[in-house]
Image 1 (tube, rainbow, N blue to C red):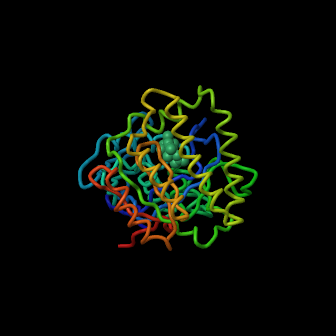
Image 2 (image 1 turned 120 degrees about the vertical axis):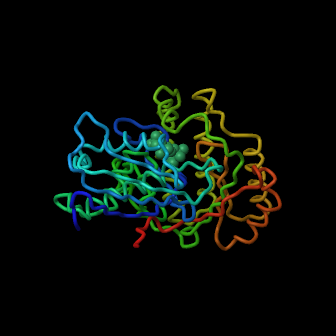
Image 3 (image 1 turned 90 degrees about the vertical axis):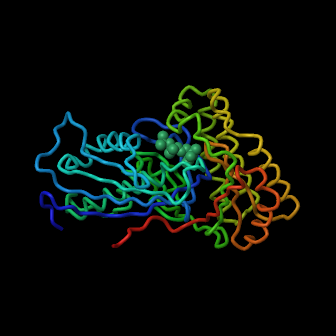
Length: 357
Ligand code: DP6
């Protein structure tokens, strides 16, 4: 690969969003989680990011900002650009050579911005994957990294915690726990436990109750956990839930799976709404959907359950084999609770990939 001044090189990655079943909520130090989390990487909700880079004639000095431009949907996005400059500045020890390059990111999401879907996991993981590819292309990492995905997960975590899980497809864990021999607080890993076949490709209908930007940013929300009276109990509960989930996976135990997933979602919101006035993010239609999902499960006996992000939108998880019945239920009974009848039809996906040109 050429590394000449003035010649541009590029790499492009598509990276997905993910939805946590066991939530990361509360962190310390440099983006280290206070409890282990478990998530499903999605398939259709993705960010595509191209990184173009070229060597500068003169490196930027330690006191200057890195030379970065960030374009989103064809337009320069100065707000996100600022975040990326701060993020890349924080990677200085890991990637000191970034000072020698001019970097241009061009990015777009498949999911509309008007859905309130958090894009930090997909966008930060896409950036991290581009950076790791850049250092591979240029032979800048010495010794060459053994596992580029582990390194990308590590770098993505420094941008946004949940982003470190998006680097792998399927079921992914992040955060050290005795039950997960390969686990680390510093990067995510694919779940080692075998997942029952019919759960491997779970579907996720993202029901858009409200598309406004949320009042509490995730970072502020994590911060509120440090003085929260329930914090220690919550971290213990997350570990217990992980244990229950491992057993549920071993035994294909649908009831436990549903109990853990729904309890995690409601625990997140209990913590949120007892943290600050702005933490009351659930809306009447979120609750209407939750009640309708539970009634539908009771009536049909199907494996359907809900989970939530730090916002009012509801993720409905269900099996591929029940797709027709569940999507009919969504059309007939849930869409009236959604803003402009909006929902996103998603499912577990295989993780990020490089776009070869
Ligand atoms: C509720 O990863 O967005 O989605 O590390 O500050 O960027 P930062 O937070 P973020 O938090 C995600 C919180 C969550 C639960 C989860 O994804 O595990």
